[in-house]
Length: 420
Image 1 (cartoon, rainbow, N blue to C red):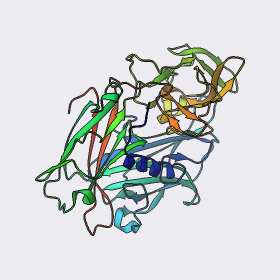
Image 2: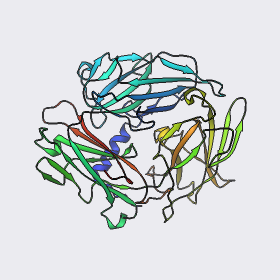
Image 3: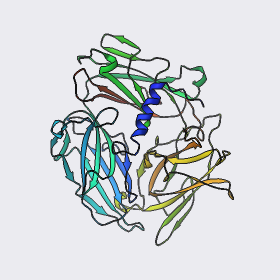
């Protein structure tokens, strides 16, 4: 499918890719750190956004497969809307302390893979944001310049009213494949002299930063209302429903599980071979919009009694390994297209295959095709349909003339099947 993104969208994607391996993106820097979860504690696997000054909490959870106990510490840093440091002093954006140690940890129980599980809730009495905006959470051992993981978090200071709708693409050529977002914001009493500079919005599909589309100029202005409904704006390929598997138990084969092998030193799970889904017709299936949930129905606390297993994926596609390579991505690996998600072609089976070590639970995943030139295509193996159920995160940033940072003043979650 041809790329219909306008130039400013491509620039936004370049910005996202620039920080793909930086400390200002969602990253894990050590192979022994696994199963990183970061969400609003009101709902597991939700978007990591909280309202400033409310009782909202973000929960960070992760495992260290090296076991034992370590002196992990953390800090948060205020960032602009493009995830560069705001270069503010910590006194300007943090209450109380600049960093703290993670003291909530526990050891795995009765698992083949031994690990130590760590948890952290933010804000807390030691570390809390003072102003609204983007923040990067950095967890490190000994030296803050060498983080073990980073997570993006969103602190909202609501100051605007938002309304939005999801419609079919206005482009006849993409009406059956794309989903378009039109929205209106009312900035009320905010001082807005130049809407193109003072107010900017970002829309993401299923919380994926690489899908972000930036809006600078509104299509129309009506008093304090900014209307964004240009035919070329915020037009997203709908993609397909995510694939999934369920490993809440290692005693029985569930849907999509072909075989489970349990040994003294490791667990191995073979998934059924996945077909190429780039077909002309849409087929509905329930999914988690890319998310994953750590669960163990045979235990009492999945944080510490859920085990790990080597998950073996196989993909049957007519695409040749001479043309490119498929990758397995989802929220579980931050949608990273790298060596850890890369599939290998086996000529004797005429299949692509890969193995990924994952903790028990329910997982969504999808296949991304990367051609020999390095161009990534999310729909080549999955297809794209207007009917696909998706979440969209709409974020509004405010930066009036003379301000020194970007303030996050509005947020709403949209879903293709729900009316606002």
